[in-house]
Length: 357
Image (cartoon, rainbow, N blue to C red; front, side):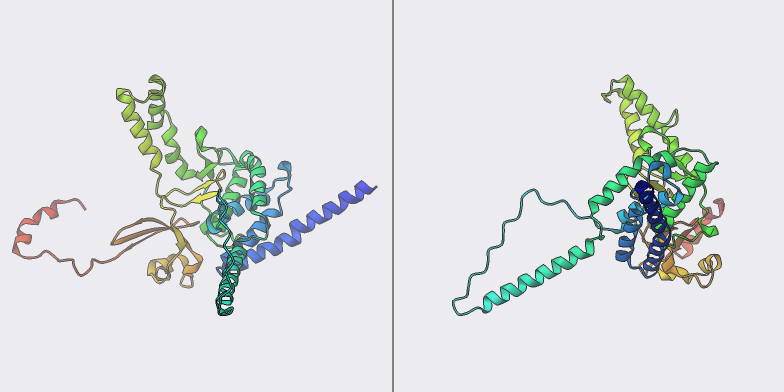
């Protein structure tokens, strides 16, 4: 009878945690994101992950997978983890000696020490998640294998594909600092697939982008040629044709499509472009006619996250995170630009008319 009573109490507690407490924490997270309070959002996000710490692999549902993965990705991009302690401990600071003329010097020294200790305490409090960081790392590591088994695969239809797309879309919404409960038409990004290859386990990309990325490991690609050359040369890589194959493979491995969106479950990272430079969209873009036509006249730029694809002196290329839109802004040349004109230019510039449009 006692075991039945304990089991019933445990069921009621879990029902309340995954019901009332979960709804309250999610509302707090949405409120913190709306106020751009990343410190509070990190604390709430860590506690949302803590709700699913003791979930068994057989009990992993879509909501549990969403926050177990979203919390790690969000904290990886927005929280500064404590650095490792130095191997050698710092020497203790000697206590100030009493001044021969009294204690003013000692008083000033004590005041400076108190201020520095208070500042250090504030910095430490700002880094705290109210949860031991080692506990979070252990939580994510224990659930990682179950997440990979539940999300892995390349099928685009079925229950697993739908759950995978729902989890990945939730991760993108959370990382983009938008409401985790929003699900509008702009967020229908398409099916997510796991990349092919033994070294790509846990790397998920959008379905229309996975083909270009996985082509590197297809038969006849530079990766396959390098593998064959290495097998023929015994792994030495010093053969005549092996060098070219390795250079092609290395170049192909280091170059990633600038339009790639990738979620790495192994590392808990989200990549929106090669530069990985993300931020809130500048308010000047919201005043552009094309932007207002697509997203509405009342669209707020602070609710959009952008990833920089390319930036030059006269052009800025941005990709809107979690939305299938890209922005390119061209700036006119500066004052040092001189327009070529005169009879000489008109005489020898007729070849421009022959160029195709």
